[in-house]
Amino acid sequence: MTRILVISDMESPALWNATSFRQTHPIDLILSCGDLHASYLEYLVTMFSRPLYYVHGNHDLGKEPEGCICLDDDIIQTHGLRIAGLGGAFGLYEQEWLFDEKEMEKRIKKLRRKIRKQKGIDIFVSHAPCMGYGDLEDMMHQGFACFNDFLDQYHPTYMFYGHCHLEYGSFERVRHHPSGTTLINGYGYTIVEI
Image (cartoon, one colour):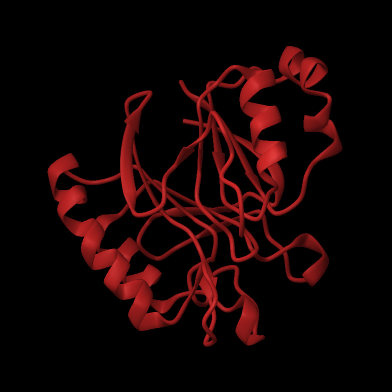
C-alpha cells in the first residue's frame, strides 16, 4: 500500500507542523496540484523526506521549488504507480499556466506517446478539474471538457486536482467520474491510500 499526501491551493497549518504530522500520518509520496508557494513545497519535501511531484496552478509564477520534481506534461513511475501531470487552468487571456480548450487538447496529444510507452496511467494530476465534475460556473473556475475525454480513454484509477476551493461553495472532496475514475480535490490536504 502507498500512502499519498495530496495537496493544493492552501497551505495547511497542520502540515507546517510536519514533525508532529509525520508521527501520526506516515506517507510515502507527496503530489501537489498547484497554487502553492515554492517555499512551502520545499519545506514539505525537506521535512517529510519523501519525493514531491507537482503541477503548476494558474497562480504559480516565478521560482520553481527546489528538491521537487515538476510533473507537467510528463509521466513518472514511482511506488509501482504511473502518474501523469497537466497543470494550469482555463483562461482566455494570455498568461502563463492559463489555457483554452484547444491548447489543453494539444498538451494531451503530446502526452499520448508517453502514455503508450508506459502502457497507461494509474493517476492523473492536474490543477483544474474536469468540466462538470468539481468545477464552478464562472469562467475562471470551469474545468476542461478534454479532461473528460482523457479519462474516458485512459481510465486512470484516480484524478487529483485543485483550483476550486472549499470557500467557493459546492465543494466535494471525492467525486466519481463515469469513466470509473475517482476524482479527489486536494484543497489543503488529504491522504489517499492506494
